[in-house]
Image (tube, rainbow, N blue to C red; front, top):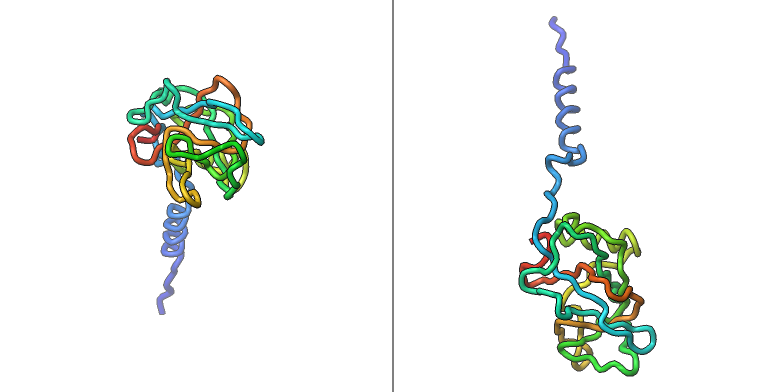
Length: 177
């Protein structure tokens, strides 16, 4: 009787499993972002520790305004349903983001090769529930059920005279576009 060995088959199975389970290498990683990105800045301090952020004269929400080679903080937001403070009346051009903003440490725009990559910068620095702020995060109207754009208010402390990477979901003005 002839003996059958399964060693070659077992070895092939182990090799196939290791290829499937291996972490992606640099050749399969997403390429660096190269598109100019939208940036916002702090526009004003408001009541009760709030701050207004927005486009200002330097922003281009249609094509991006800052090369991906620049290192800037990411404008991060944790929307937690915070009520509008007295003294702010949300509108289309200056809504209420229902939460808190913060600036991450500076990162090269080329690192922001997807929305997930940008959100992960905020989560790594500030924790769960944080994400990159977006152009349309300002809410207004009855029950804050409408969204606007260009600026918004939120709680937080931000550096003055600092541009921050900000997402926009309906234009090609993000580093990953």
